[in-house]
Image (tube, rainbow, N blue to C red; front, side, top):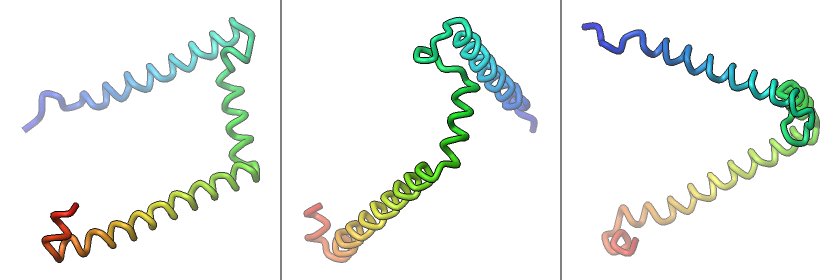
Length: 98
């Protein structure tokens, strides 16, 4: 049975992409009108800087350190959860304490 909303997903996706592109164009236009990059940087300048940062060794090292901290935190939480969760699942008094 066809839905009343069938095909509306495509329409909303089109509207979202159009709005995003218009916003970026307005941003670029405002940056050219203001001519002070400290207030409104150009989108093209932001993309250039992002590309430069993505290939820099410092950025790659920072990303590696951040991912390492995320995984370490995850495993520490996993260990703490197991230490508390297994006894709480096996013994009612421990479960009642938490």
